[in-house]
Image (cartoon, rainbow, N blue to C red):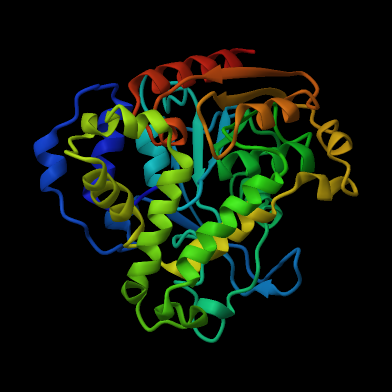
Length: 378
């Protein structure tokens, strides 16, 4: 969910290596840095130009570019490819650091792993990197389905892959996973939507709207025509705090679990971790992603009938939930899973809640790898 600073990259790397003790001195001494969307901070990555790309909401993105990174070698039969799309405010680099590595479920020595950045995250085509006049607030509306159609073209046109061994994603990545499994049922053998639902609930939509309002309530927002993203820092800070209040568990604060990351107090954690994660980001990018999150509904592919849509899924599916997750509660995830043929519900527990997805909890890392290894062996 986060990316941008040396601090966040360090936390993800250490957690991915299952080290339970982080270096408090390094964390406290880290400085926030401006988000520089470059090969140096997020690479190595490549881009694929899809040309003019028509959108589900109408209009098009001219010269749509998908940024992606690959790990491992595609087999001669092209049957070992895994696709992992990015999540809200995340990038291929954080996915790599939190989920990819030797001995892990996503092991580059066994699989060809494609980490793709969703439209609007600042690396793929986004309001922040599109030339005028279609930049900023003039960037067109995008849906999750647009991401998935673009990713399918990348897989087929760039790599010649007809069927993926696995599509998986967390949070907004789970939304993309569901869309993949319903829209292209013959194009993936397995699916693992993690901590996300096939259709946004009314409560979830309300929650996301508060994130949007937190940003746009800043007078410097100026309808999306701010001269510099740093001017909207008050809105970004409000957004960060609302995000942290609603998405992380009560025990994370009440038991002071954040101290494991080297923070001395709740406010130290909120400022040094959560605000630090969002302040470097472009507000228009975040708004675009939030609207995609809020409006996602895979039943649009079946005339509004969710059961009918999910019944199309042919992939062996593990629907994975974090029991303490507030953004995507277990009850909502379980209701979707019951509608998916050939699926199993897998439960994880973490005092970090939704934040565990970022790789800060070694126990989560071990359990998610176990579930994914089981799925890949099926």
